[in-house]
Image 1 (cartoon, rainbow, N blue to C red):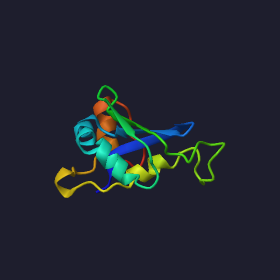
Image 2 (image 1 turned 135 degrees about the vertical axis):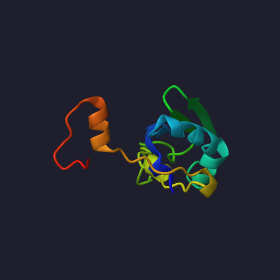
Image 3 (image 1 turned 120 degrees about the horizontal axis):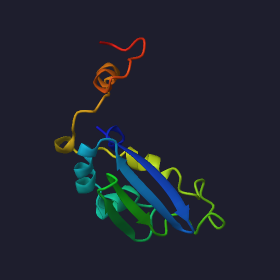
Length: 129
């Protein structure tokens, strides 16, 4: 199981710093993100890309863990020769992180028919009962 099975991610840039947010798909998965996504784990995952410090901010009210990656963009957009000087693909890279077997949880697949019935909304044609 990979991080993409339980989370989404967004990244951005400011100068030579990249920002990275990893957000749990389900609130119940946030404690796993908080436990596994440490500064050391993120720094190791981006070895060779992030040359500076990594700062971590836990955002439990959003179900997210946010990172600031210093010296991560080859000097910044106007100075870097990197193909991704903006750091936009850093979020895709973190989602490929394999979760340890003891930490995995079954994937949460929405049941459209059950969700529609529980909400009182009509289900769509083709939804299974």
